[in-house]
Amino acid sequence: MVAQRGESLLTARIVARMGGYGSVGILLLAGWAALTPEPMSWLYVAAVIAFEVWLARRMAALPRSAVPEGEPPYHFSADEAQLVGRYRFYFTYPALARESASVLAAIGLSALVLAFWLLYKQAFVQAVLAGMNLLAVARFTRLLSPQMALRITASRGDRAALRLLEAHGPAWAKIRAANQTGS
Image 1 (cartoon, rainbow, N blue to C red):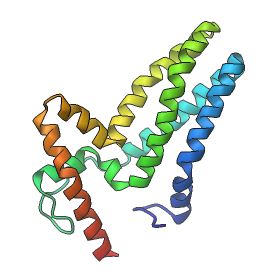
Image 2: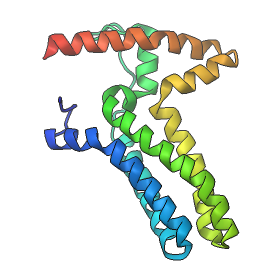
Image 3: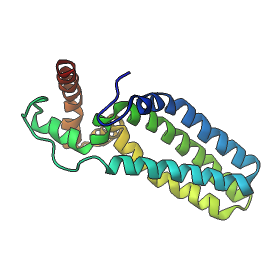
Image 4: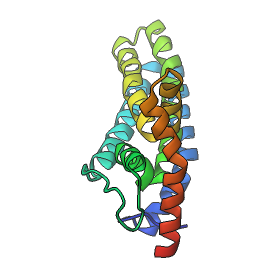
């Protein structure tokens, strides 16, 4: 297990196990919130907001500068540099992005069901918060799973998205090659 830039080995181990437990934890909270809406739906909403705030802070901590083209150690082309710059979190912390996407999937699926159930149980504020949370889940999912987002956009005829999708494989190959020679 390799720690990413600035991460300790302990953080890398926690991240490696987070997805399965995080997803299960969210689903358990959602189930519990469905069984006892009044106290547990607030805990569900608080856990979801805490995770999303944590994720947003991690994503905002990355540099916003453009990725240089043709410079060592990666020698990215223009399309590859644009792709890595747009989805910097995904390329900087791939394991964390994958595990966070798993947790976001659990949040999204549980919120779809729980929002309507909480409306039925007349927990209106919690239902609205769970439902509106789907907007944040969609935004984070687009940033954490670029292949899915680019495929959907390219299927609608967006040539720029198709170019970026074609640059995904070569960008990862260059990153892996540079990391193997650098370590």
